[in-house]
Amino acid sequence: MQNLSKFLPVILLAAVMVVVLISLRWMAPGVIYPVPPLNVGEIAPEYNEVRIPVPVIGKVTGWLHKNAVASDSTPVILYLHGNAENLETLKRSQQLAAFQQIKAHVLAIDFPGYGTSDGQSSESALVSAGKAAFEWLATEFPRNPKVIMGWSLGAGVALQVAAEEQPDGLIALSPWSSLPEAAADHYPRWVVGLVVDEKYNSIEAARSVKCPVLVIHGEQDELIPVDHSQRIAASLKGTVQYMRVFDAGHNDLFAQEEVWQQIHAFINTFRNSDFGKQPQE
Image 1 (cartoon, rainbow, N blue to C red):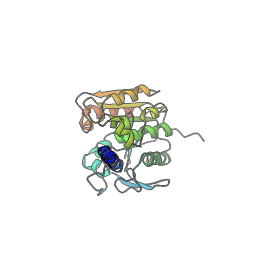
Image 2 (spheres, helix red, strand yellow; image 1 turned 120 degrees about the horizontal axis):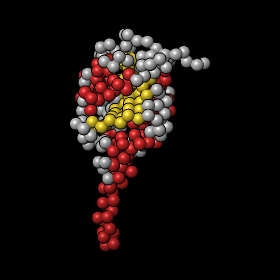
Image 3 (cartoon, one colour; image 1 turned 120 degrees about the vertical axis):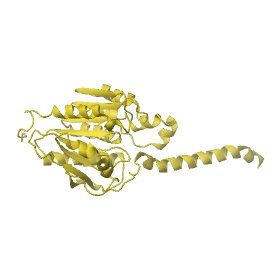
Image 4 (cartoon, rainbow, N blue to C red; image 1 turned 180 degrees about the vertical axis):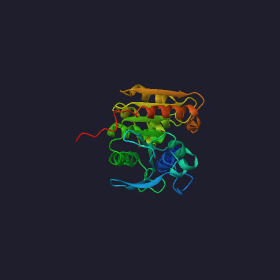
């Protein structure tokens, strides 16, 4: 009994650690995929709702804006939102309205587990939804140039989708090199290794992306430091435009006029005679 009492503090500490780790693993999905604060309400002006089938998951909800003055060379943008966002937050922040100024067709989707989309959030579910949305656009707009754009979490998804679907262009805003690396900027690596199962390996995905890419990152970003996007840009094989915005952090990136100017300029490079031709059978 005396021998056991000597080890009691160690046993208690170990038990506490086990409980803490189990709790952290249980809480991890809520940290990675927090529920947005607003329920999705009325569709944004000039957008229409679409429901896109995703294998196994069900359907995800998207809002589609079709540019009124359009041709087969009008770019098509698939937008993948960030963490704690949904279509309602994009509407209220005027981001969906800003997309209309690009003079392109725009589809923004809610990931599985977000808004009114079916399913539960996970890396495989989000990537599957992104691929399904891109393939849906390819069917709806077969001749148009297609650009995938994602911010933060959405950038991690966009890189993986682009690696598999090979769009005409990719815009990665505030991307992480991988989820574990991003988490390790804020928590001990041993905790990250035990708690975080999702990978979102953007470096690996970047090596398979063949299209022109625009990478934009806020110099003052404390959530996902700018060195993450530096490593991604260095891993890309094709044409890369890399923009560091000195006055921007993470959540205020879209508030910078120069960011929108760069996005407009990049999208406009796809308005040329090479697109809009009849696809080869």
